[in-house]
Image (cartoon, rainbow, N blue to C red; front, side):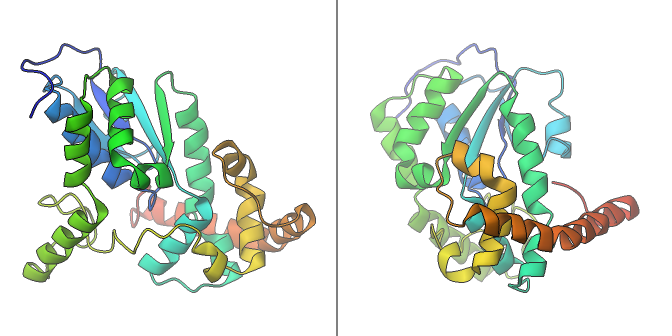
Amino acid sequence: MSSQSANVDTDVDYVVCCAPRRSGSSLMHNVIVDVLATTNFSSSVQVVKAHHPTSANYLKTEGTRRRHVYVARDFRDTIVSDITLYELPNRFWRTASMSVLPESLRSYRYWRRQPHFYTTTYDALTGDLAARALEVAEFLGAELTEEDAEEIAERHSANKVQAEVEAHYAKSPVAQQADIDSKIGFRQGHFQGGETGKWQRVLSPWQVAFIEFHARSWLEENGFRLSQSRPRQWLAAVAGAPFMLAGWLVVRTKLALGRTQVH
């Protein structure tokens, strides 16, 4: 059932899901699309996903009326998810050289300065999709009923979506695996269980200390507790600095050669 029967005039051109990769941005993107469709929001409003302000998706929104929706997932868990998805060595030097941490922190500082900014946590999103749908609708100026929000939550529940993804790739083993598959809105590997706090079992104290040194302000601002002492964080930062620099140089070189892109 639709909350409204006619298109709603709006001052929004783009809704940008601006979150680090492995943070639930695809889920939030699909929920927002459903919210706008359910409330008959203006059909001219587009929803895009951007991990960085330099992405092509985001650059095309310059000069438009934008709303920014950010999902904050514990960086320690996003690092674990990255390691798992890309089958990276789970070693201190590899964690320190990963570009996702510094790039995501720089991007957050940019997003946070934007005039229309809504943020939620990954746990809040996955824990109560209906409540987040209602919050996003209010943020955008759309009138969504609680009944509609519950129906949206059901359509995008983790079990339902994961089953759809698995069924799709079982039928289409050569489907797009490097990017989002247009038929289902997700790509293979998007779902790894979504466990919160997995970093406590997977990462070493020194890996955690390195992440906490660099992401300290972000973690505290978004309600995540630090686990390592300040001295250990400093020592980890010093030990990881050469690897971090090496990782930055590799990414810059690949960008210059056109062999990768910041997305």
